[in-house]
Length: 209
Image (cartoon, rainbow, N blue to C red; front, side, top):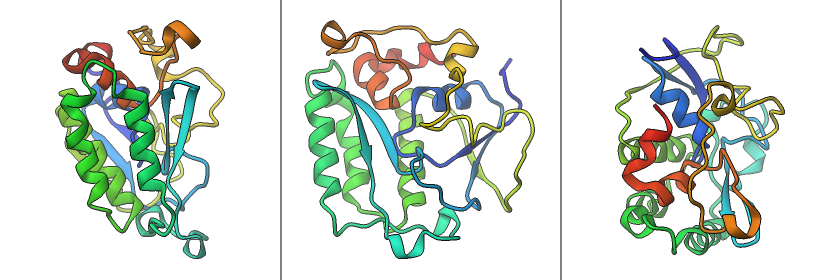
C-alpha cells in the first residue's frame, strides 16, 4: 500500500531523492503548474556531490518576466553559459561513479535540446528520471492554484530552505549508500536523484520503496 493517496509537488530540476520517494510511495502524482515562480527553490536548482563537497547548480531565468508569473511561463536564460557549466560539473562529480556512463546520454540529451521554458525542462527530466529509476507514475498537472491541497501536499516542504526533517528521515528511508567522495567528506543525504542513480543504478528503486 502506498503511504500517500496523492502527492502534490512543485516542478523541480534534477529533484532530490525525497521527491522521488514521495512519487514512489503515492497512488497519484500532481505537479503544480499555476503557482507563481519562487526564487531559490528546487524549481531551477539542484544539489550534487562534487570533490569539493555539496555543490548547488542553478538555472538562470529571464528576469524581466519572473514577477507575478506562473511557473509555467518562466523562460530559461541561455545567454549565460550555465548549460556548459552544469554539464561539466555533473561530469566531474559522477564520471567515476559506477553507473554515470550508463545513464548520462538519457538526461544530457534533454538538456541539449534547450527547452524554452523552465517547467518543460523540469518535467522532461523528471519523467526520464522516473523511467531510469524504474518508477511507474503518470504525472498530472493542476488546473488552478490552491494554497492547500491537504495531506500529501509537499510543495513547500521539499525545498532547499526547509529546515524540518526530510520525508526520508520521517519515514525511515534515509539509508546511506556508497558515494565516491564519502571517504573525504562523509555521506551526504537527500541530494539530487542523480547522485543515487549514478551510484546505485538499478538498485536505486530499493531506496525508495
